[in-house]
Amino acid sequence: MKQSRLFILVAAGFFNVLCLMACAQEHAVNEKKLAITDAVARTTVLLNNQDKTIPLKSLDKKNVASVSLSFAYSLVFDSLANKYDKITSFSADSYRDSVNLNDLEDDLKYFNTILISIDDQNVNQVKYINFINSISKNKQVIIAFFGNGIGLKSFDLLKMPIVWTAQNNVDAAAVIPQYIFGGIAATNKLTTHYSAKYTAGSGFVTTATRLKYTVPEDAGLNSNSLREIDDIAAEAINQKATPGLVVLVAKDGKVIFNKAYGNHTYNDRVPDKVADIFDLASVTKVTATTPAVMRLFEENKLKLDTNIGAYIPKARTTPMNNIQVREVMLHQAGFIPYIPFHNYIKEGDYSRDSSAAYPTKVADHYYVKKGFFKDFMWPKMLNSPIKTRGQYVYSDISMYVMKDIVEHISQEPLNQYVMENFYRPLGMQTTGFLPRNRFKPEQIIPTEDDKFFRKTLLMGYVHDQGAALAGGVSGHAGLFANSNDIAIFYQMLLNKGSYGGEEYFKPQTVDMFTTKQSNISRRGLGFDRWDPDSTKHYPSELASPQTYGHTGYTGTCVWVDPSRGLVYIFLSNRVNPTVTDKLSNLKIRGRIQDVINKAIDESRK
Image (cartoon, rainbow, N blue to C red; front, side, top):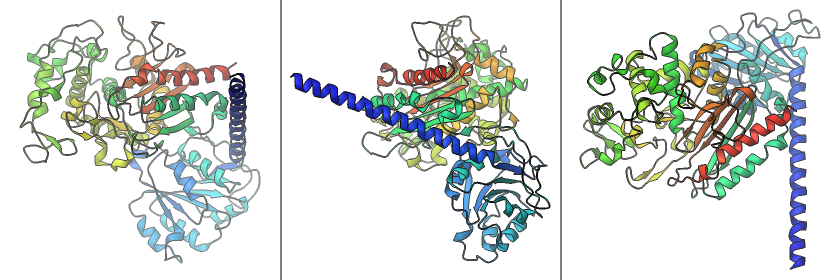
């Protein structure tokens, strides 16, 4: 017995030593990565930027192609660029017409912004310079040039912006796109005279306007301090709290951690990826409906102290008429929490095939009859009893109401309004409602294997039954996105409304909606917040009183902590194959948040 116990102790000690070695190694590797990145940055100069093209703005007006002119690391270059906006990749090497590249130029006809990657081994090829000259006549062209500065003389007659680095390697390929999109600020000038045009002292200075993609050490954190995230994620999966999950951490405008764990389901063994798209559930409330309210409030089109009936004609003869918008946004309107509309479905209300009589798709092979929302669901909500007005009672009905108000004022469907005003301009590529209209099912994480209502595995159809019956677009649920997109949106809010050189909200608007606005609850306007009740440890034990964000029923959350410069995102599908409370019972989300909080606090000592 003593021998076996001794063996266990020795084995445990050996395991701990291995862990410490792995930790030390990861920290050393990341310090080396950061040193290499800094070396690239020290040799990077922005030229020909007199028109302030870089960093790129107005992404919603750009259709961007990345063209490799025999650049060896184009895959890495394009991968980083894709974090900022949708990039379509082309390579000159794949074209048979390699003499004048007319075919390549023809294939670029639908693109208005072209990123050219080229190195010092190919910069003297006449066909490449001719190609750049030709496409620059009617397109915005940006050159990423890698290698010896002597090659700059090939661009003496060109006027488009050039981001040049003396490095020509995979690390440089990952850094330069971040200059183009504003993840990294340009600060250097040429120190050498390379040509008649590119002389010592040439160079333009910019400011960082978007997220930077880097390692924890770049934000002053030690990678070792975040390793516990792996352990907590493994616990969640092993305890069947969720089949898989994605965690993203942004600190001071830098994405320092973005990792996927587990699989899409317990059965399929398809690994989760950081680019996978999740059903955000109630995170919809603060990533779609509330921002729309904020914008309309700023434009003086929506008044918080005006009653619902002023905006919704159908509400004027209902109990909702005199309730103020502010009460709705604070969940103090007295609405009942929700109505289980799927329990009211009867034979004849749905069909397994679409038709004029059954146009609304709820899931694969499930269509609800025409007018089900307008004629049944909406009147039932409008006429639901007002029982707890003046008290805090969290209600999904509140955001059905706010969606309708937004649509009356903006004269646009909510999904269209937020896409045009926020997601496209911000470069958010996956965020939106009805993802099956835009993405393959395998890019979307499955939620519940619904045995009772829709009788199918839900892939890209909103899990929430009411939102599904409303056609997949609702104020309280229905939004899908990946972790990077959510990071962009909440970094914009952490920036007090600005991102990518554009102002989406005034700072005072962000402050107003995200800070405590109620005398009887912890809530902001639309936003959930840190709970001052110390027994609740919500959203986590170490969360600061400034923390705001929201959780989602499917196992998602986003929390912003301005005091730490932190954006924390957790995405999962804890409702697969069916609903479980283990994610909450094990406090997975809060514990991961506290690993991050503790790491930041330790870095400040």
